[in-house]
Amino acid sequence: MKKFLIIPLVLLSLVSFPVWADDFDKGLASYQNDDFATAFRLWTPLAEQGHAAAQYSLGFMYSKGQGVPVDNEAAVKWYSLAAEQGHASAQFNLGKIYEEGEGVPQDYKIAMHWYRLAAEQGHASAQYNLGVIYNEGRGVAVDNEAAVKWFTLATEQDHADAQYKLGWMYASGQGVPPEILYALMWWKIAGSTGHQKAIEYRDILEQKMTSAQIAEAEKLARECIDSDLRYCADWR
Image (cartoon, rainbow, N blue to C red; front, top):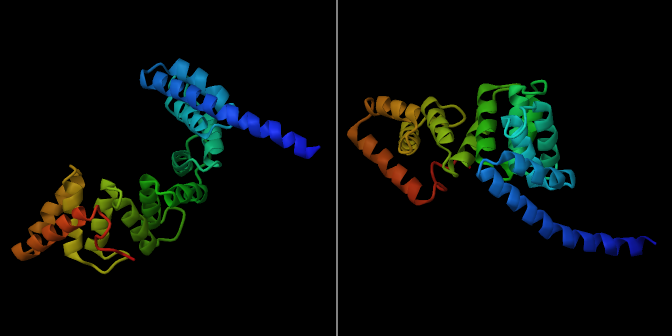
C-alpha cells in the first residue's frame, strides 16, 4: 500500500513547486512596490505549506510591521520555521532576535547557534556578529582567536565593519600578533568604503608610522583588493 501512496505525493510536489515559485514571485513584485497587503496575502499560504523563503518573508514583515502590526512572537515563529529548513537569512535574523531579546528572552547561546549555522553558509553579517560575541565575551568566554577567524571570513565578503574590527585586532594584538602594517591595511580598505571609524583610526595610526611603512601598508591593501579579499594577512 505504501508504494502506491508515494507516486501521488511525488506528482503533487512536481506540480506544487512551479506554482509556489509563481506565487512567491508575484508576492515579491507586490512587496517591491510597497503593496505589503498583497505580498502578505500571497506569501501566507506558501509559508503555511512550508515554503522557506515565504516563511522568512512573513517573519521579516512581522518584525518590521509591514502590512501587519509589529509582532515579534510571530516573527520568531516564521523565522524559526525557515531557519530549520536552512534559510541563512532567517537563521541570522533569529540569532539577532535572541541576542537582543526581542520577543524572546535574551539568550546568547541560542543566538550563537543560529549565527553559526548562517555563518557556516557564508552569511557575512552572521560571521561578523559571531566575531563580536567572541571578542567581547557576550555569554561566552572571550576567545579572540575565534573572533579573528570569523572577522576574517566576513572581510573576504567585503564586510566593512569586519574589516575595521580586524584592523583593530591587529593593532591591539588580540587573537593575532600585533602588526601595524596589517592594521593600517584593513583600515585603509574599510575606509575606502566610507567607514568613519576606520578612517579615524587610519589617520591616527599613519601619524605614528614612517612613510615607508605607510607605503607598504598601501601596497598590501592593493594586493588584498586585487585578490578579491581572499589573500590578506591570512589567519589560517
